[in-house]
Image (cartoon, rainbow, N blue to C red):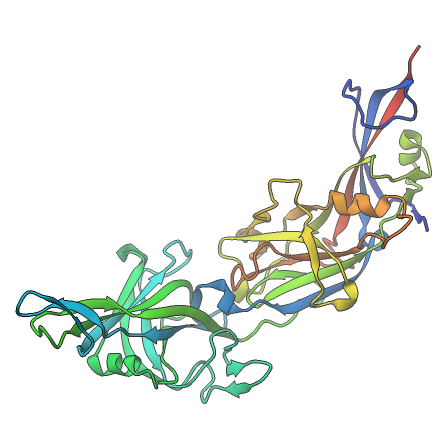
Amino acid sequence: MKRTLPVLALLLWGLAGCEESMPTAASDELLPGALRTVEIRLPWDQFASGLEVWGGFSSPFELGRGVIAHDFKGLEARGLARVIRLNRTITVVDSTGASVVDSLGSIKGGRVVAHFDTLSPAVPPAMTVSAHRILTSWDPPSVTWTFAVDTAGEQRPWPEPGGGPVELVGTGEWSTGQGDSLVIPVDSATMAAWADSLDVGRGVRVDMETPDVRLELDDIFLRYELVPSVNQDTVVTLSANTDIATFIYDPLPEGPGDGIRLGGAPAWRTTITTDIPTELDGPPALCPLLGCPFRLTPENVSHASLVLQTRPTPPAFQPSDSARVEARAVLSPELLPKAPLGPSLFSDTPLQLTGLSIPGAAFGEGGSLLVGLPITDFVRALVADPPEDGPPPPNTLALLSAFEPFSISFAEFAGPGGPGAPYLRLIVTVADSVRLP
């Protein structure tokens, strides 16, 4: 069923003659003449409804790096790494000069090495970081601030929220001027505990001790000294097998209320149900230019974008660098929030692989930036004639981070019903046909 609506905002984009050929024409005797191009802006209530914000997609574990923070705008975050194995078997040269395999060496001391993102902005000149041995069994993919294990089959809280109890290994001072690494010495008893395969915790927790700091933790690993049983005058330095498993944080952000939210870890998505009018009947300036009612078709919609206005994200979760967002069609809306999505709607643009990059400052205090998400193919499909057989094209749009998860931070935009409400921007081009003599 065709829907006709007046347009509340229309801006003349340009009138120009053009000799470029058009792919369609009413007859072989007709040639394209002048092009008439108009920009049309549809307010929210004329093209969309049913905005929903969904959380819980992916997990911090899938980010592949950690975040540590202490009293950063109210945020606490700690990095966790699983100690998989400390190898005791090495090949050494004995007193006869022969190479032998030795699996009876003794582990001495070692060190925790943490790598940080040296490009993190707004960090103090020096920070204190601590390392701890985890004493409780935990599950890296599902661990949270409250739960050591949080799976469908088991939910087990930490004895102490935040990954405790723990045993302090040591502390160290780190600054961006000393490179990206911090080394914290570890005594032989702690290294021996981490080497114990029966230790159910077998993990390292890294905490930020300096207040008002949030820092990305790229990697955690262990180095340790092994003294062979064959040649005890030799000390071999080895690296333990560890995973930078995840990070835990508190508090979890609440929903955005009346806004749009994308990204985070776990990630947020926003879905919109669209009802694109196929015929436009106003305002008066439209009719003399294109005629009314004007029929939207895939051929005359040369560009369509969903325009959003950024707004400040809660301070603890503001992007420190940039946010990358994209749009996809929801293929089975009845299965939301876990509905399958189509490919990126940016597939015909250079944004296909990376999403649209929005500077982090746009989500800070006073941030207000208009951002256009190109959804031309999505709109063209909806204004086309209904298919004779098969299902109609999807009319539910999913807005999400281009990578899930991309960061603990997320992007927020103004929702409908207030200043900065989303609108649909259409560039419509019509060619005047010229008949051959």
